[in-house]
Length: 277
Image (cartoon, rainbow, N blue to C red; front, side):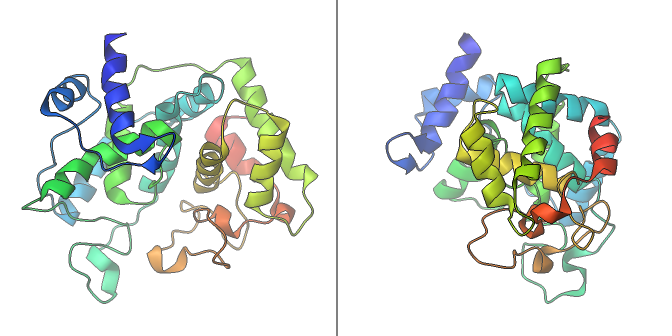
């Protein structure tokens, strides 16, 4: 139960069930406990765009994609969302093409509009220090990630994933995924991911909430299971940040599922490739 204290400190630092987001401020004592347990971190040292990409390249060579997909499935019944997040980060990260920062677009200091890299501050202030990697880990554990299409998150997420023990899904986990995907057949052709989320929640297929299902569907889009021919997953057609926005401002999903319609159905080839199903 000791390791649960660090997790609790992290979650309470950024979220209240009554008021929502919090600042991330913790006492030095709590930070020390959470850090020692691997839930909170010192502010990262500056790393260039190319250095981050190289580190990611080396990391990807060590990852077994079956471990990634098994972890995602395992999360469905256990609700251990840190296992769920890595699938989105992996299939985004491995699709990033070789490129120079900003890839020829007008340069904005400290950011790359191709891969989503953002530089860590060389002189972080107190707000920076409260955020850093800690808010990324909060999002990873609370919702299964939020920023899978940003290089710094994907790199952090996959590094943390490699510290987790390997897990195996059960037949119940596989059934949950099938039941989620079966909900696509209940939609009219023009309906989108928001309606799919609504049906999944209504059917109570798994213990979850709206925010978690949103991320779950985002991840199924990133890995290619819920995509369209016109807007495929990153591995089949990488797009930069300028071209990821949904067609309408009310759509709160990530690319490419923010362009998915029910008529697009399930990409069975990607389902076999990613999950072996």
